[in-house]
Image (cartoon, rainbow, N blue to C red; front, side, top):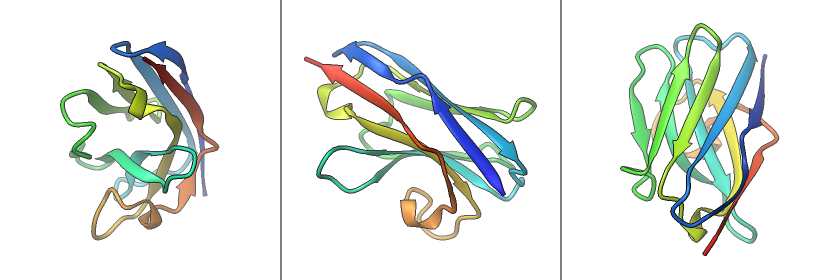
Length: 124
């Protein structure tokens, strides 16, 4: 069993930055992926970025590539999402998730464990 708690959300102006954190308790096996997903009102949950716990390989959705950086502190069992050059369209509830994933690693349905989320609001 894995418990995930997000923090670091807030309100920023376009062009600003935020750093999200996801603290994991329980066993996050080296075969797990841990990822960030977001859901805006009225829209489906979508993948943002994910990292393979065992090897550190990272994957990004097109909208996040070049602006967001996912990382993980294995010793502390914390995952981060550094978000730069934020845009109003990045406004959403951001969730972290973990699980053994096969197939498309940014598909939220592939993940087993989820946090409650942290709100990110970007104003123009």
